[in-house]
Image (cartoon, rainbow, N blue to C red):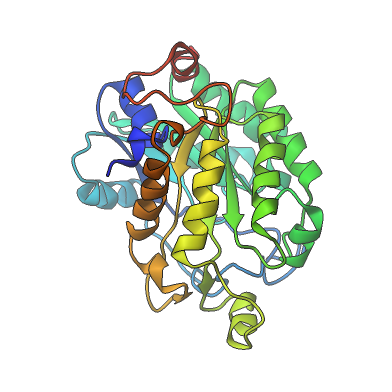
Length: 322
């Protein structure tokens, strides 16, 4: 069962733009985070595995790219994905050096930069806008997780929804697409809150979304609460129900970079289903398929996704902004 029959996935988006398969290559550039280095706080978000990356020294960017190319199945073009930590949390000269190193290869067609909404200075946005003007695919990935400030405080996020709204507006003013990360199943949040978060994000305008179930990982503060029975991550069925509903409420031109997430042992403590790459994806696809003609992305909006790999005029405009 193909997810991109129902969902405007990043794979579908990139095939439409470049005419072939394009893969993301995740990078670790030894950034840190203001929520753990003392600038905003210590220990990071409660769901974050603080120790898993501590004292980790990764190889140079070029070496990482080469190693990850070997594992990228059936692709000849790539996006350099600065994934670990807060990848705009440095002086702009440092950012430029790292981003330029990643773009050196002729097969690298763009950048995805993961960061926090409160760590996106104008200088970093100007830098990313410059790459976009040169024809690169550029995505600013903002970790929001929830649009509710009480939830963000509960998980020690260190910022509120206003920071996200501000960063998104400044990115859009420069023509930079935003991919927003959302977590389903955060402590204290009913499923309805995930749907409300989606609506608030869509109201501001967003080009991409990435959905994650809450995962309990070794080294996080939530791990202790989970052992005490105070918090439970969603099971696969519950998560798929919520994620499928969110997808059906998402306009067709929004690109889904991910609809589930995984972690490996021994880092992952719960839920066990997140150890497998495809279980969550297949559960979501089954639920969308069960709705028949009303199962595609956008079916609950004015712009449902066509059951074809050919983009609509709205999608073509988003895919070819230059």
